[in-house]
Length: 256
Image (cartoon, rainbow, N blue to C red; front, side):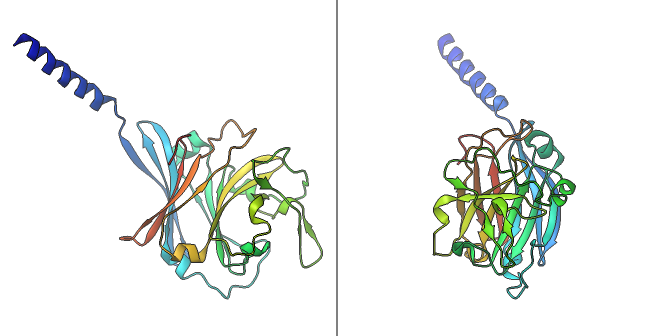
């Protein structure tokens, strides 16, 4: 009888320890901005006091109402810069989300389809707005499988490292450079002054209107600023009830 009581006591104690040692997940709201009549909002998720993921809610209405007859603009107009929650900024070094609409697409051929740029910047908006591409020095190294070509413009100018004012240089997956098939989504890595300053899910309008989940790998990067926790994985999760995506950037190395 005593033996049985001890077993029960141990079982209860183990359960209590297990329950109390499991951190509570907490949702933290950032800020919102209206883009083409859809409200895009940033957020973060904490496990206990630790940020484990951050992201944004992207309504399908934003893609559905994006104007297909919008004229070509260079640099592309930034439709919104939306800050992440303060705790995400403090722990992950992630400052804000910027959205651009590319109605005409752009070179190379695979990107000539209407799409959105969702830039997650590690620098404040005023620093990004000050980028004028006067610094032509490319980063010393790029992630495996990525290239940073120069792009010839119709006016005869050359974008060194595909540097776009008020954005920065763009490193793209090498396998997509000669692809003739229109893309759905890809992960762009952004630099300026040889430093990583953004990660960018570039997503076709058609993919967002498809209302299907999708994922993109975020490559490992050398010499990232010590204040930045580079996400390990990007997942776009569609919520049919709210007709919106959750763009989720997981910080854990084993993120799925």
